[in-house]
Each structure stands twice: as C-alpha cells, then as structure tokens.
Length: 252
Image 1 (cartoon, one colour):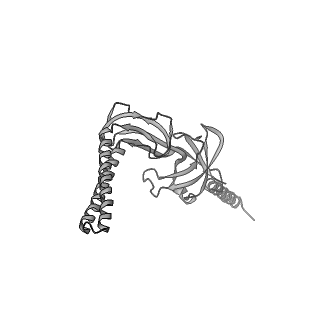
Image 2: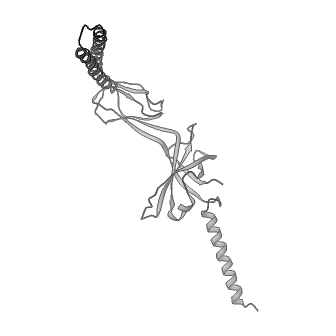
Image 3: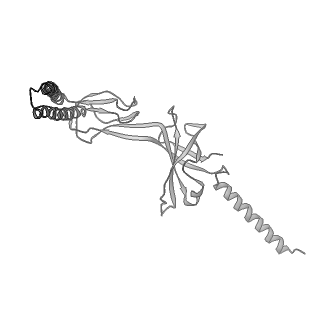
C-alpha cells in the first residue's frame, strides 16, 4: 500500500517535470514566448571623405537629403586639374591623328614599319597621361558611394579639406539590422536564415516586421556568456529608425 512518503516523492517528481517542460518551452522557438531586447542599426553607415587636399567651392546637398550612388555631393576647386586634363586630351587627339596618318603612309610603303609602330606606342602613352589627368580632375568631385540619407554635413563652402577628412555621413535604412545578445545556452535554437519577428514599440506597438537571422557571432564573451545576433529586416518605407529599441521573437 502506498505510503505518504511515496505520494510526496511522486508529487515532487511531477512538479520537476512540469518546471522543466515550461523552461524548455520558454527557450524554444516553438514555444513563442521568448523575446530579446534589440537595438536597430542602419544597413550601411558610411563616412564620405575627400581623397585630396583642396578648397570646397560647392555643396549640393543638405542634411536629410536622399541621394543615389554616384551623386555629386560637393565640388572642390579644380580649374588647374581641368586645364591639365584638356591639355592631355589635345595631345592624345594629335597622337591619334598622327598614328592614323602613319598607318596610311605605311600601307603605301612611304614610311617604315618602325616609324608606324613608334606612332602607335605614342598613342598608348598619351592615352595613359590623359586618363591620369582625368582621374585627378574627377577626384575634385565628392560623390555618394551608396544610396541613402545624408545625416551629417561636416564641411562648408570655402573650407579647405585634407585627404581622408570626413565631409558627409550617409546611412542606408532601406534595410536595417536589429542586433541583440543571447546566452550561450540559447545558441542551439538560433540559426542563420531563421525567420524572426521584430516590433518597435516606441514607433508603432502594433506593427510587426518579418526578419531573417543574418549573423550569429561565433564568439562568446567569456565574462558575460553572451553572443551577438543580427537580424536583417526590410524597411522600404523607412518606418524603422536606426537607434530605437526593438523586441525580437521567434516566428511561429
């Protein structure tokens, strides 16, 4: 006949199983209860600098402007470089004319093959000089390397900039990253390309954004036992702002 001790042991065992099941459900993607506190980061964050030292003569954008890749943000003084490029182009045109003429003369046996080859090689050299002058001139136009929004304008017309001096900051939030940290014990439940759900309560507590795990840090911080995870979220309307907090949960 079961004793009181037997009943107490059975009850304790059942309670332990129930607690274990509840804990597993809280950590499991299928449980749907686990959420992580994340931070929204821009998809790209680029500082645009000058490649040369010169004086700013024009700035074409202001903070808040949307730009496309290759758009001219500012122009530096470039008159001398422009003249050098035009001179190199004129010399190239002359060399190409001479080479074309020598080709005809060679075909008519009027000049030697060596002289015709010399004229062609001079064209190659003149073309290289022109391309270098053109590149030097084009460096005086500061262009956007990515599409995005100008969030910082760090220079003004009339200022002299030096190589690598920051002039603009551009962010791309057409997509965003949501970065959060998980315990090493939760790593078996999170994999690259897993679907996730993202909410930004400060912006819109009712809107849910679908996301995909894009990166799981292979390193675990020895002090905290945490590792970094990044979820990428499409943001074509720009509704999600970089820098806000976000709740990330497993997609059911």
